[in-house]
Image (cartoon, rainbow, N blue to C red; front, side, top):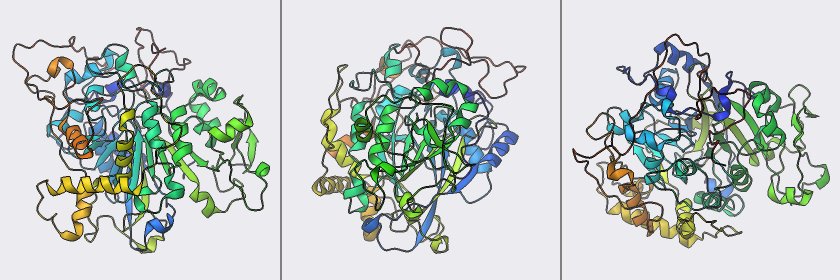
Length: 615
């Protein structure tokens, strides 16, 4: 990454993102997208960094096409319901248009006031935000948008779309875990945050939530992590494009230990309350660390901690033998060491992280890393070899003025849909008319994994055991999924211009734009009341996906439209909105945060996800 992990001037509270507070200006509607002050939006747009990240050829899976296009991807940290502001900031930036927006959690797809009661934030900080405008059809997302869930979400709505789906036209949720394709990129993600006491449990939560399930519903589970790890063999055994490694991975919380592979000292200067967790190797998610080691994506984007941070992870297999280099002499980054840009060497840090595991356990459970912060960092591997085995990590701030919450990444992609690192002279613009339209598409290997592991999804509060070995997805499994998708596509009414024979298979892979409203949008009759008494009402998109794959509902229910009667009573207490004091001085958007107990937040307290009472 260019820039070396800068940005993020505020104290941040370590990812304690207080719900929809950033959407407090949503009532001041403007004629253009964006409810924030135009000067602030333009200032934020000027702060956006743009980088180019060429990705390596994938061997025989890449094909032979030399024509290339550049996919311009905007990455957003925590959204906190400020969708208008995010789009307005991107539109205010000069330059070519953005092809795709990726949001790394705390998206807050709040449709109405009733949804506020399914979001784990103190009632004082609940705000409608601006998403409902896109849900209701008042606005349309100007950029295709893919997001994952965090720990401050409209959980009942997202649970309807457990396997992924459109939350609004042109805005796609990846589900509790999911993989899709866009313009040749394989994009995967895990929603939620990691809590060890819920990790091995089933998905027992269902609306209406109590105080406990309101929080546990967004905790990552071992079944979703296992499914992701089933994609890990693609990097070594894949011979087709559908099995190549993921290009982009999204998570809300960081992979555990990732801070050791960037400028850890600078991170602690900005967030000094991270010190203890860094020392104890508890900063981040153990589940995400496991996924990182298993699937080794090219790019990894996160949020949650409200700070911009960059790192480069260099993977070396535990049993790999380097030519001419003894195993004991590998460049290994110990927990107490980081690469420094000034010296270009590995130097001892002021913070030492203790690791009590044996060396055998470390080789088996973790990836060997080399921290790379500049070209001066020495390594005995060639640059091309490093590129083949690197994961570039980026975390961004939350959506507030003068905070680094957006970044643009240019990715070179071959015209045949596979990623390539070719020269810019051969590239062509993504919007050139000769290219087929960029659509969010199914990932057939992921759907094949889902079919093979669907029985692992359970409703129990007890522990769910997953196999020690990854499930083997055969070519027959993949062809079966393709046949199901194409058959469903053939029975779907075709849009004009999509029926050419040479594009039939491609258009079949595009996820159908079958969004539908399942609850009244904000401001419409009945929008203050939860339909069906607050119980899950299902979603036709989930029905269609499961039917196509031949799977049953387990954590979801078939869609049952509910009509709210005039004499229905509210299923929730009245919404209390926080009135803002115009004279308040708030330099970074975090001042004055109140904990659930009503106490002023202590800056020295370490509390990453507002789950104080989970334990």
